[in-house]
Image 1 (cartoon, rainbow, N blue to C red):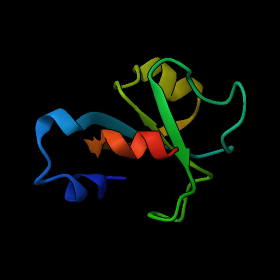
Image 2: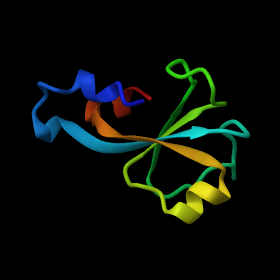
Image 3: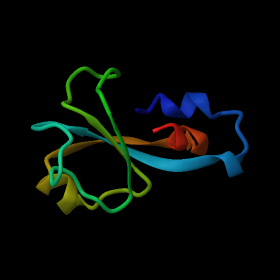
Image 4: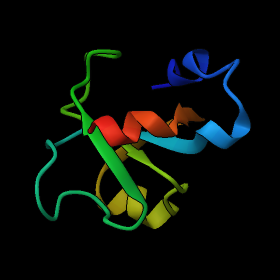
Length: 87
């Protein structure tokens, strides 16, 4: 979801939130299948085509969380706060 940065280049800082994106390698989004703390949203993998789902967090997950839940770190970026209200 590195593409999210492109959508907020000209947005005021007060209207954006820092995000960290992850790909779910071995399973899709379901209760207990991803860390809860800082979770913002889950999305279908239309960007990469190789993950069950993509996850967005307001914090960078620990290495242990990434390993335990078998996730790939896809990067950080910014997202419009208003986009969270749509989900």
